[in-house]
Length: 165
Image 1 (tube, helix red, strand yellow):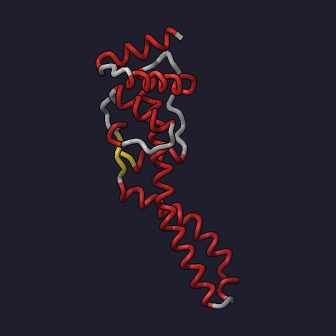
Image 2 (cartoon, rainbow, N blue to C red):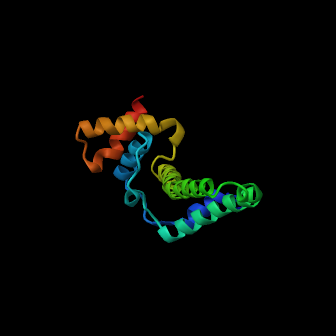
Image 3 (cartoon, rainbow, N blue to C red):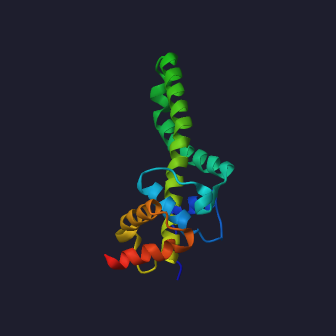
């Protein structure tokens, strides 16, 4: 039985291309570190790419779904005010719409980054739930970087340090 998809899931699936290749351990750990610090993660490392045209289309539909009802409700009161106020209002709304796309794109990118990290986490660390261990493994990863642990020994180093604690 497939779980029911939310609107956000449908939007994410529509505007992003996801790679079928697994995420490398070092890329996963680096992405987790960056995500925990509130930074944007490199999409190539997490295996996703934005379909910009589709993102614009979805954003336009969201904006229309908000503006059309508001315009319908406010049409009569706005028709009777000074045109200068209407022009200023239109300029402000236009600016908000254009700035809003950057917020929309950023939010969608954060959501897909989080999902890709969690999905890869389940493959790499199946016995260590993400919510409980992501900070701890991040600390161990940073220590591994300081100790210059090689790529091939990184997984063993992390698991050994997790078991010791």
